[in-house]
Image 1: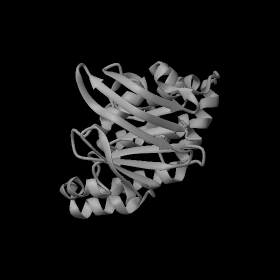
Image 2 (image 1 turned 180 degrees about the vertical axis):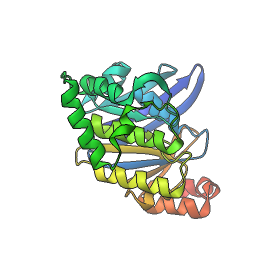
Image 3 (image 1 turned 120 degrees about the vertical axis):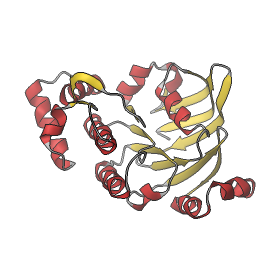
Image 4 (image 1 turned 30 degrees about the horizontal axis):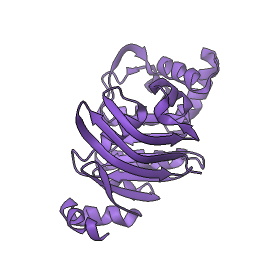
Length: 248
C-alpha cells in the first residue's frame, strides 16, 4: 500500500485553479523528485498537502491509510508529514533547540525533559557533522541560505517524519553546499520514510538517488521516469519536455 496516495487532486487559490487533477502514489522508502518551471504548481502541491489555509483542495489524498484532507495542518504534521520551506521564516527569541524540543514532543506524543532532549539532539547533530552551538541560535535568525537548509535538515532528522516534503532545497546554494545537503539526506534516509523533493535542477541527484522523477506543467504531471529524465531536462531544457510530453 502506498504511504501517500493522491488522486485527482485540485488546489485553488481563491478562484484560480493551480493544481489541476494530479494523481501520484509514493511508497515507503522512495525518493520522488518533482521538477518544472516557475508557476507549474510544484510548491502549491506541497503546501496544499501540508494544509496551508491559502488553498482550497478537492480530490482525494490518503496518508498512511488515513484521509489526509480531513486532517487539520497540525494533525498532518503530528502524523508524520513534514514540509521544509523554500524560504523559512526567522523566529526571534526562540532557540532552535527549544523549538525542536516542542516540535519533538508534538510529533512523538510524549514529554521529554530538557536533559533527555539535549542528548537526542546532540546525537543527531553529531551524526550530521554539526556543531552543538548551532542549536543555540535563534530559529533561522541571521542564518545564511546554507544554514537555513541545514536547519531544515536537522529538523527532519530530529522529527523523523514518514513523508518529508522539501521545497526548492537547492535554492540559493552553491554546488558544494548542495552536495553536502544531498549527502546528508542520503545518510538519514530510512526504509519506511518517503521523500518528495521539488526542484528546478537535476544537480541534487548527483549525490542523491531518486526512484522517480516527475515533470509538472500547468498544474499537472506531464512526464515521469527515473533519474535519466532529470538528466535529459538538464541537458535539453524544459522546451524539450514541453514538446516531447505528448509522446512520452
